[in-house]
Image (cartoon, rainbow, N blue to C red; front, side):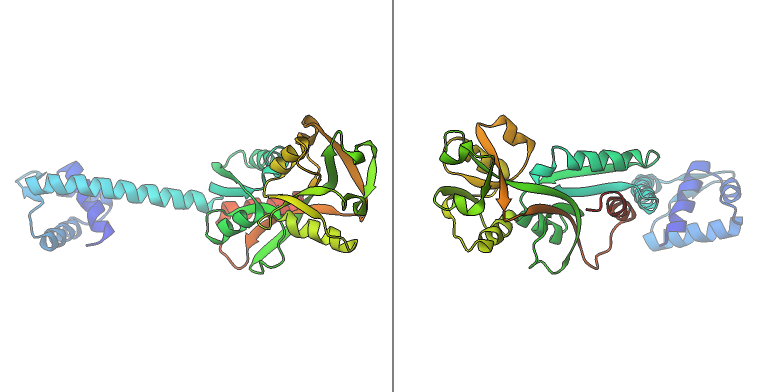
Amino acid sequence: MNLYHLRYFMVLAEMQHFRKASEKLCITQPSLSHAISQLESELGVSLFDRQSRSSILTKEGRQFFDYVQKSLSILDDGVSVMQRAAKGEGVIKLGFLRTLGTSFIPEVVSTFLKSKPDKAIHFEFHSGVTTYLLEGLKQDKYDVVFCTKMDQETEIEYLPVEKQDLVLIVPRNHPLANQHSVDLSETLPYPQVYFSKSSGLRSIIDKLFEKIDGKPIIAHEIEEDEVVAGLVSKGFGIAVVPYMEQLLRLNVKIIQISSPAWERNFHMATLKNKYQSPVVQDFCDFVSKNYPE
């Protein structure tokens, strides 16, 4: 059984006449008759009641017609989806750090979509911490993620696309609250709300303290930037965090870190040597061209 025979069957069922069906199919009448005979032989039933002037579906033919119609419809839909994918259309599964979801990601995605007004492109958005995002990337849950670079993930390719300054935040009644800038060594006497090891920020902030040969007093460990800031606002400690607009709405004092100098870099992460659909590749190329850091 082949696909052509099924399509011949559908046309003959519609036309109910071998000559008319063969003319529509642009094949000879004997070729059509042979194809239908082969199909009937394989199925073991007669599909058409061949009368003098017409060919009408038998009971089995009507049953088979319903199955073939549904099957060809599904197949045609699949072919259509693949053809649209080849044209750079389809779904992009995007993972990103929550802190990037307020400004950077909406800007990148909206600008990309505006550059493709004639394409049917849809984004699925997922936020999380770096370790979970990268794990999701490796498990094919996401096509592209935007996160902090983790050097131990050697199978992932990183492209820097955005940066964010690190600042110190303290409760407004804290001894350091009257300062506009601090040396990181000045934070060592005070308990800190610290990023947990599952956060991409952990290694960055660890390296900051290594630069001053200091060891912070860790009172609490948290994954999310916003939760760290919320705990600081309620007096659970001080914290080194990336600067974000949400800090302005909390009861904390934002203090610049004068030394050591550091900034947080965000990266677009994709799997090395992995096939990307045309629409995902177009998006990655767009980001590479328009948002290189």
